[in-house]
Length: 277
Image (tube, rainbow, N blue to C red):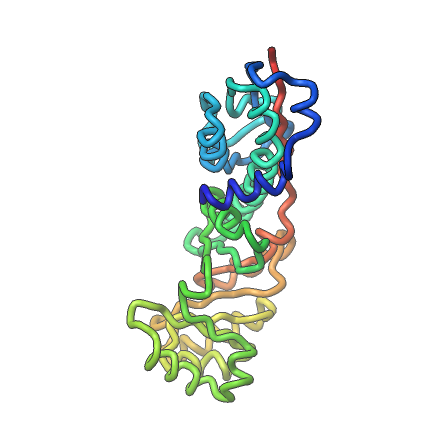
């Protein structure tokens, strides 16, 4: 993580911070605070700490990752070299704002589904921002959600394009069983009752019902119950799920609801750093 953060900061600095270096002396010290401009769930404090440590800035924490925040809360108090404070400001804030937005949205979605189904897992997808996937997935966890796969090597995920190339659901699952460690679960994306049944019979650990309406999912679950297949697999609903329809999906009794919305559409939480000297 440290290398990624330093790369981001150096990309932001370029050759130098010409404004700060031109008007702020190298030996000037300052105090500052990071404050919230709106309410939500704070995330990214551990990320900010890693940045501050690299630039030898002293800090005290008033909040921890996952805490609820209100407008004008002081999140972190800072003290140290003024140039260093200013040079890391934007990168630290941008990451915290992005992560806090994802954590806040995730928390809201978890709270929404818990009202009708206290067992369903709310998960993210791999619709993340290249380069900061780890931070976005970590924010989902802080909001009470499940990160699903961080990377391609976490779990076998047989998607529509894999199936086109292999040509057969059962064969794709068999090949995965033969060529992947027993420690990895096998998940497959399906689009109909028939495909869900076939995938379950072929030994999939997780069956993802892709872009199905809630009533279609209920039909799938009913048929799987009738055939005694329901207890053998985890059923995941995914595709087109958003704050406006998540309750309907939670009412279907699926095991997992995965949402790209958590990462690709989360608004940021507005934070600011103020010099208080």
